View 1 (tube, rainbow, N blue to C red):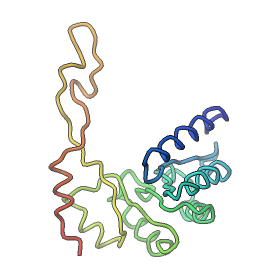
View 2: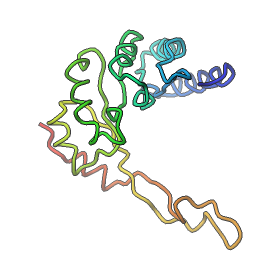
View 3: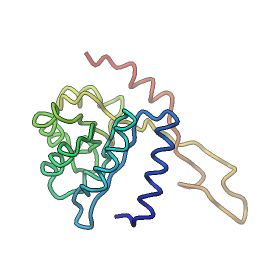
Length: 178
């Protein structure tokens, strides 16, 4: 839930991204009841499509009370893709739901499975669920001594911060998905 001023600001930021080369925007608007906010989602989809870009509903989808009803709503609003872990803590735990979503709705909206997918489980996951896309953070942690001194600390996870790890990305790219 966002107030109107926050929503207007988000639309302006989305326009900036779209006008400067973004391929699309990932967003997720829910009501206080955890339902897809049809009005705000529709506004965002229209904005994004006016730039001929892709509208991606993010994992806010996973906390809606009925994933099937929610995905039908997203389809009716012309969302291009939904990022999901199948309503579970990660996509591996939600693989049965993701498989079902792909089987029933994959021809109407792209199912982008994400959270917990990596080079070690991506091929098995794809073969089981039949999704055409996966999302992976490919993260690892790096030491950053500039985040603290003897009095002040801005350190995350002690003195570590998250980074996209090139090794993890290359490992995913090198999987033969055929």
